Image 1 (tube, rainbow, N blue to C red):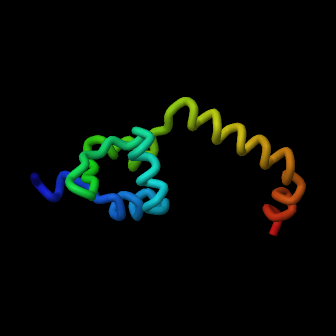
Image 2 (tube, rainbow, N blue to C red; image 1 turned 60 degrees about the vertical axis):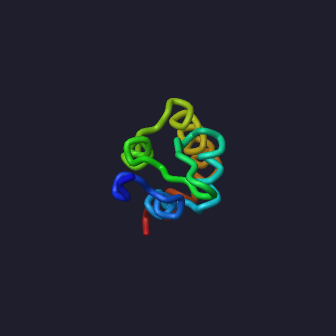
Length: 85
């Protein structure tokens, strides 16, 4: 197995800017494909490219849009004031 073709959980967590636990959860839910090697996981780079390139699923896009709309609705005036400074 070529070491350069795989990420470890901590490596991928660092690249994505999320915790190792979050990556483990994504692996367990099947959101990130990984190969189990003993007690560790190896994540093929070809499977993680979508996560690193910023490709979002339609559901993720909807969730982000909903969160942005909610934030603007609740904090719109504050955001406008912060933008002036």
